[in-house]
Amino acid sequence: MKIAIGSDHAGFGYKARLKAALGALGHDLTDFGTHSTEPVDYPVVIRPVAEAVAAGLFERGIVLGGSGNGEAIVANRVRGVRCTLCWNVESARLARQHNDANILSLGERLIAEPDLMPIVTTWLATAFEGGRHARRIALIDPIS
Image (tube, helix red, strand yellow):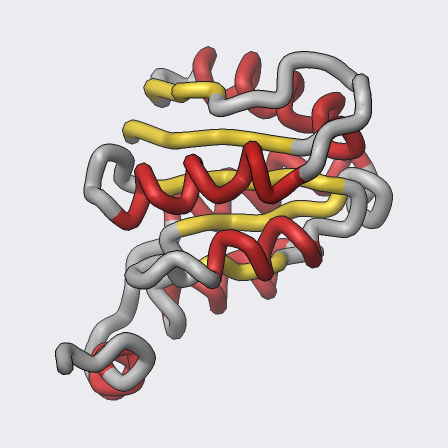
């Protein structure tokens, strides 16, 4: 799967782990930054990830920060993005099944390291159920 990934300084550690693990699983990742733990304003890094996913250049996106909250807010400001903040496997599964989330937001300070990969792999592997959920998704960004 073609995945855009980006983080601020507080999510940099988990981003590095995800890049290695997902690359080993055969995913094609493009890193939008940041490239160190030096402080950075997260909107500068996260918005380009969201714009690239919304434009269809990537199938999915993953954004990371300290809590993941700010990153999700920024990503969701881009029309066509459905970014979800997930903290466990169940939230990741439901985000895909019911919300067709195309960007995953994660908080490095709030997710235990052993939980990181199960959350991400569940989110990547889970299909959208469609049906009544598709009708609801269509109501988020109606064509005007």
